[in-house]
Length: 172
Image (cartoon, rainbow, N blue to C red; front, side, top):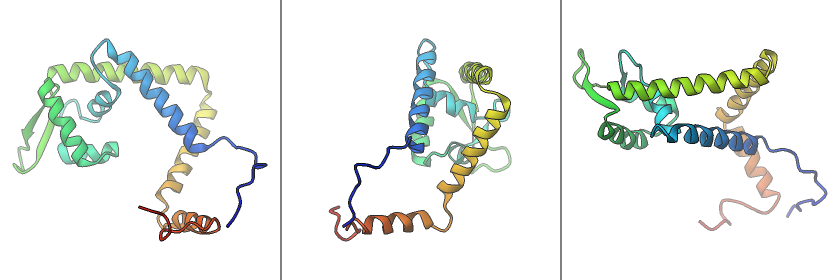
C-alpha cells in the first residue's frame, strides 16, 4: 500500500478554487437579490428564458446543466410565483414553451442588470488579456471534465490501487 507523504507541499487545488469562487459569486447574488425576493438560482433560470419568444421547456435544463426533474420542480414554483406561464407551441401542441410574465420579465431584468454590473466590476480589476487567459483556462478545464475516453477514471483507479483501494474492498 502506498504511503501519503507528509512532506508533499500542498498546492492550491483547482477544483476548490473554482468551487469557493462560485459559492462566493452565488452568495453575492443572493445577498444582492434578497431585497427583491430573487435568488441566484431564480435569476439564472430567468436569464435562460428568451424574453420575447419564450423557450421550449426541454431546452432550458440542458442550457443550465440541470437535470430535467430538478427544473420541473423549479418551473412549477416559478409558475406559482407568477414569474412564468406555460404555453402550447403553435406548430407542435406536444411542445410546451416557457414564457415570462410581466413580473418574470421584471425579475429577469433585475438579474440581467446585476450580472452586467458584476461583469463590469470584474473587468475594471482584470485586464482584457487576463480575461482571455482565464477563459482559455476554463475551456481547457472543461476539456478535462468531458474526458471522452474515460482516461481520468482509469488513472484514478490505478492510483487508488497503489493504496490498496479498489471498488471491491470499499464498503458501499
